[in-house]
Image (cartoon, rainbow, N blue to C red; front, side, top):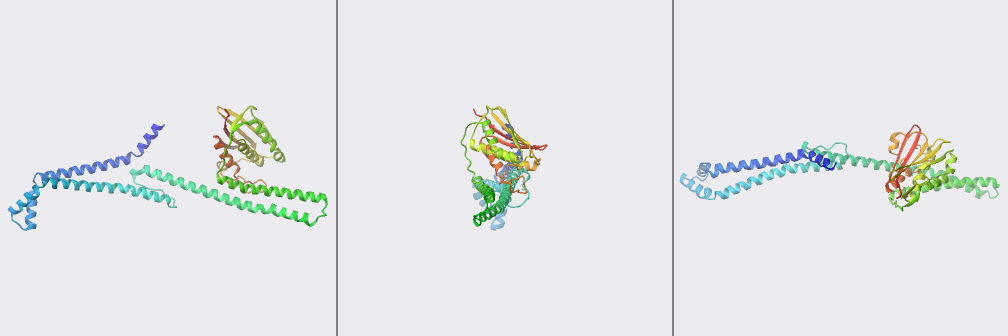
Length: 379
């Protein structure tokens, strides 16, 4: 594969190398012809009559005097004249060659300037510089894609902050309202007081969750996820998480079924891995059809373990599936206040799994959504 790649690179630059070679050979050939011409016309005295005639015409001297000057100063120092002429010829031809090569540098420089320009036009270079043209256009396309991704992520973050700021007002207003009622009516019946206290507490929990989401954004942007790995009983972790999330699952009529080998273990950060599985289960609970099962299965493939989470729910389009692990992305564009999150859960889950040397993916077909988490098996 490496040999083929090298050969391909040589083929890409063959036209450019050929053009340089032909131009250099042309310069050498012209210099050779010029030297031969000097030798034939000057060294062999064939131009002597011309020089004598020019001396007679410009210096207004007789033929004998002009011939003497030619013989003493031109013929006497012919080696110096000849060497000087050759040097001047080579200097001139090399200058032409460097000037011609500089044109390529100017084209590359213009291509680099085009990378910085905010336009959609493709970079065009000379035909023999096609490899450079392809690379510059590839870099330009990459920069445009990254810019678009940054702008999209920034827009999603701004929308999220706006949504959260708007949503915080509702529980905060309720908390303040019910607390005012409790303060203004100290003799309120116990049942009513208990009801208002319960509502206030629920709204306060919701407010706390939203504030945690703001901190989640800060933690994610700081990119400070560090792992502390150890050997973990995978089956026990899945059972424990299912039990912890059972109240939220039962409220929606969902149950968890675990089809896994009880002796499986992985080498991972227990807290971070639990966070990944918890995020996936919470998503499954939020977007599953009521009264359906969430099936957790495991599969061993060599030195890898694949953990799958399967639930029945509304099918997700391929376009949305490709963005599901992007930060600040939410499948629920309507932003339902009770279920809407930051859109960071799955993005952080992907980063944690990648740091473990694994992979995470998702599929959706026939109203069945399946998350696959691939992890290295413990030695």
